[in-house]
Image (cartoon, helix red, strand yellow):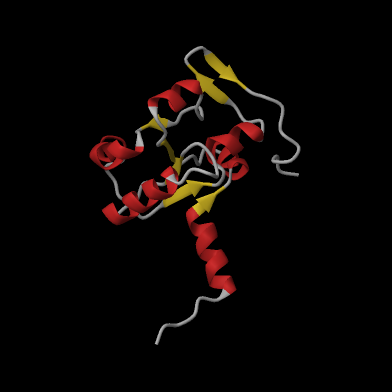
Length: 138
């Protein structure tokens, strides 16, 4: 007989495997930054990215992850474009299946990172837009 998942267990598990832009930014500011991997396309990467992120398009992730994270215990945050994209969910699953034990998905992806007014890197430098009052943390 299957044991039903309790609400507390569900939410605890969700928090264990997801992070939001504000929490990721705070961890980076505190020097406890995980490896951040952008799994979007080359076009998405060129349009803007989280500063310091590593670009590995989703289809190449398992082929290249060992180059940037040889230790299966490496803290990793994966992201894609936004909440309508499941590329980071697929990437997280791929990494967990490969044996990585500290993988999280960035809630809202790059879209929410930008909407919260956090720094964005491009080939021409860093920018930041005003936080969207509907998305930025209070």
